[in-house]
Image 1: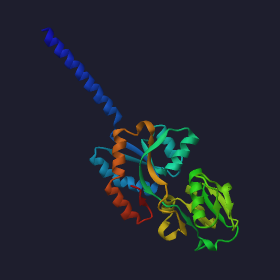
Image 2: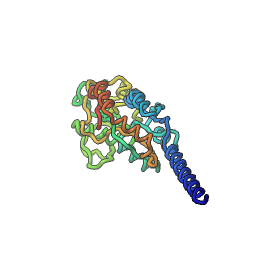
Image 3: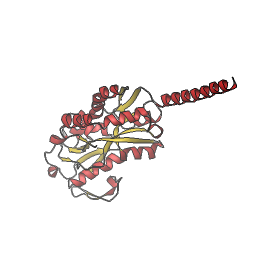
Image 4: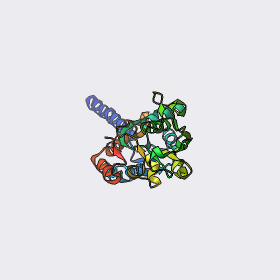
Length: 266
């Protein structure tokens, strides 16, 4: 009788441990994944993967954002599980400025930044003192200046986060104006040129392969990533989302839909 009681108690303890472990694992996972994204191409890619995630047992909810600040704040405060709109240099700078602890899981695609103009057909035709707008955040602003440097319009000091104050040569005396990245396509007609992120260019019906007068090199380090909280990086639902975003189906979708204006980064 004592032996039977001992066995029963042991089974109860084991069952309790297994049950607690299962509940803990269940708490680590969730079946509805909330992701913030820019409208194009990010939301378009996320819309495409919904059926792929459903096969893995997950439902994807997408919230659109038109700026580069709120999506990170929403992930940091737990309103969202992840976001898809930014590259690593921007993420690192955001963490530094906002004291957040965000990271990323996978690189998904590259959006080559381009120079656009409604005033000239070639950059060499820009007049002296021409006004060129660039994004006003540190990482994208530096990136835009490097595109202008590569196009031969100016020269900059070495370093990752350069600004307009780091211009060492400016033969045309170009005026560099810093504006919100989302605003650039809307004010392009009032400028001589602007360096525009591809997601905003696509929203404005600008094709980087056709309309850009100069474009970023395709070996750029600015691949767009899936941003998450550091503590969530290894959660099952984040792993599932990351795997789908780096699937062959997504690679083919990007190649077929964007025809080289957006490039897979995996």
